[in-house]
Length: 45
Image (cartoon, rainbow, N blue to C red; front, side):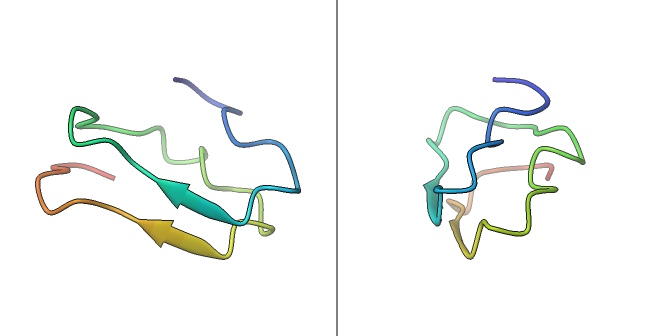
């Protein structure tokens, strides 16, 4: 997963798997993303 992974404006809920430990700062730039669920062990976001 990289930059622009969530470009679709239809995406309203995101669940991040436990194995993901980092995300580019602009991955969530799309203001259509209204709900984000991040597990406790995600170390950098």
